[in-house]
Length: 483
Image 1 (cartoon, rainbow, N blue to C red):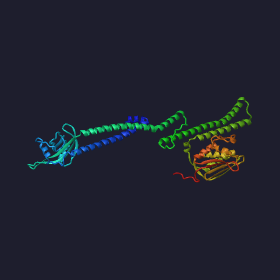
Image 2 (cartoon, rainbow, N blue to C red; image 1 turned 30 degrees about the horizontal axis):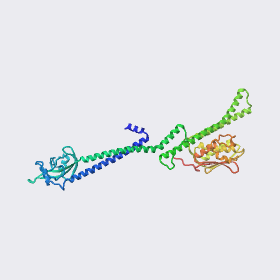
Image 3 (cartoon, rainbow, N blue to C red; image 1 turned 90 degrees about the horizontal axis):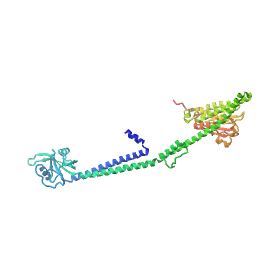
Image 4 (cartoon, rainbow, N blue to C red; image 1 turned 90 degrees about the vertical axis):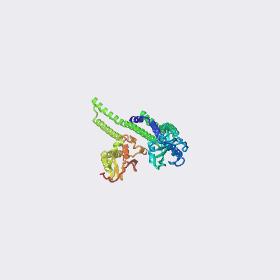
């Protein structure tokens, strides 16, 4: 059985479907055929039973002349009588003694059931299949007639019964022919059902074949541009699977394109600080190798430049690591965070980076669900931009009210045509390319805020400068801790 199951599972799915359809049809046809055969058999046997009942003309009693003649035939020669129109007509005593009717030529084989029915003498007609003395099949009717009476002495004799029969050869031939016809029809039906099932399976699985070919093509060529055509009004499982595959390949293609773009942009951004570092280090190395030391001021400037480039590289690598983190890694660290405390921590870092600026803050309590370190980094990036573009001695205004954080500087502001690109990766304004930075800060801000369920935007402020607005869902009070 296990071997058959293994072989079945190793078959193609269309072959399995065809086998299942053929098996189901075979079971249904077999059930119908067997039921039909038994119904016909019952009808034919019922007709034979009616014929046997009609073999007698009216009620039969032991006082009938033919019955007496039959009883007499057990000791005397039978007399001719056509009272019963069958060659199988006899009277049977309860001990099994057979007394033939006049004109009867064949003897019915008496069974123990016949004797029992005659002995009970309950006047119930009993039908059965049996044989004659030569082994020919017959349909037998047994009718108990009660005890015999001896007229001369008035004594009661043994119980007797009337036993008549008709041949079963014609009925059995009809049933055999019917069985053969049903068998042939069933075989044709099963074969046709298997063929139809195979055709239906092929037609139904054709979209699956296309999907399989598409997946194999993607695995072989890594071509994510392939799409499976799907009818717009189709809502079956295969259509849904095809749409899901198309969505998956589209998302993978977009992710692959973004990955390639990120690698290209990262390589471009890394090239500038690395080139500067290489140039500065080569100058320092050459001065040592040639024995011509650089003037102290130039050497100090070169070392300061190397330090600045190292800091920029470290910042860029940190930003790239932040962008490469998966959703699962971020989701594990999400918790309820006090936005007020996060902004205060970011302000302390911003004041260190812009000691010549005046940073004012008006903060109200607000709690939201986010990753603490990522949220603080996002706020720091916003404040860094404000510090970077503020004029010397300028002011940066920070306000947190009702879950809305605004950071406004008084710098030159962002041109209107550049606002749509400020959150793109590695995008830097032409006026800011001379300033330190990787172009990833605002991109990290946008992603962090979106993951927390909020929104972020930059706009030109009235009177000059830029205002950054961050809206985060939450509440002014911390939720109760779970017990």
